[in-house]
Image 1: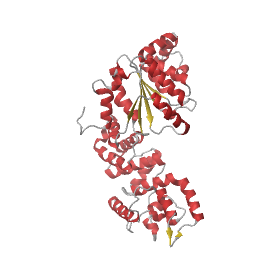
Image 2: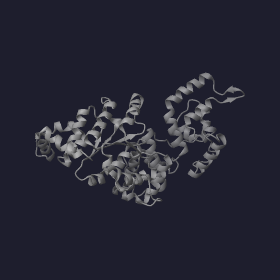
Image 3: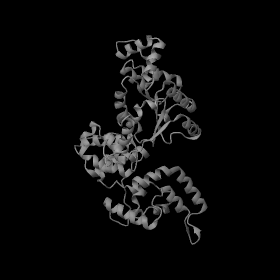
Length: 429
């Protein structure tokens, strides 16, 4: 176990689950329990289980089964039961992987052939049901582990109450441990009510997975495929931390993009890294590629040209929500932009630095001058309707187009090349 200064949240959790004396997942006293590993969407829960826990756990369990079951696309409990039984029986690792990847139904399409998987399935299909059941149950009984994931992707045909009853029954009757990987906010509406009721009866232990961006990034970037990026990882992480996003899938995509850029271009500087990272986040999350600013000869459009180019507001008075860049010289350095923006914004809105752009617009619409509203009732109604439709794009514009402001970090040709790569997935030499 690392010393206190070196411990991360994931280190501590892994130590508790698998490495300390009598670790939680190997303690026989915890057989029959259902355990929840929860956390925000994208925080890397599945990656943590599959990369940090499952490989060592399978070794330590010896003759007991350690199964990973995705609920993605599952539409009935019968097929789920068969999949668990086949995987637990461990007729062959290849067969188990086939079932885990494609589900039980895929086996019905496999014909006798010279392929190993075909022979395996034939042998398994000729075994008696009792034989299959006996072997499967033996692998799970008294200490086996089943991990259920992708609850948000299950079919609506599976009743949530029935699913948790089934999971609870598995844990108790087989005296095995069940791990449920769940996003903290996976259920909504009626299912949220059902889950609130059943979790108290079903879940014996909660673990909250909440790594820092650095922890999550390190766990992904430690893969040997990213060794070529070692000297660039500090800059990549720095740009990721600016986004304040915790999303394992996007971190992976960022690393893949940086790796491809490095291989094709034979190099990548810190400014290009920042633009590539932030452009990737903005496109994946918001489907937006920021446009390069155009310059206008006079008036406020010069101060707000980034916003004006990217998004045509229906009323020009709304541009003044954005703090002026207070300069007619473009482009400013990133440091100048950030400094001037912050100073101007703090003077105008000293107590509201965390407001979203839609909230800033709502406040602007309600402003008065000489005891009269600046915007008429009809204008307010029209603009609020527009705001409701465009709120996500506006938030993205404020965060990536203004607050993080990365489009002038590199020259126009380089920016166009990065943008085209992020949008199309194609990078030319």
